[in-house]
Length: 213
Image (cartoon, rainbow, N blue to C red; front, side, top):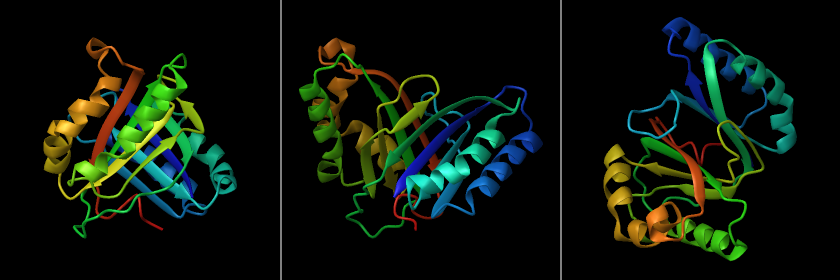
């Protein structure tokens, strides 16, 4: 599968009608080509997350290319201030629990291009291992980015699903594994920081985004 994420930042003056028109245009652009698509308002509490999360899965990169121009056209409007976006090949890790997912979270990360390859690989290993330790994580996937746009040169995307918001804001954020291993790659005071920018956003969902289609 080929995956696409767009974090949409609307202008301060955008009204409900104009933002709805953008989201309607995005749906129309991908429906003929996508395996699955979700557009959801971003919940409060994120970092550089924008106002809406547009998440789409395509059977192949060529299917995305067939829709890409129409997607860009829908976003090229005075209503949209900025878009942070990535494309990447998907490889989902399925949830251990049968609990239906109700929250989707995405983290776009920009890793310093000067970072040591061994450090980048260790960051990837430790991040991808989080579901082994943090049981609130449902389906998840970590991927290297194929193409990026927006406020930074995004290099990685880390996605998870949760049965409720508390699974993200509680066990995930406060788990000892998170602080002992993954947080060091983000925290300059710990001497191992390689992440230079991030977008952290989450939204309510009705069904799984990561396993849809």
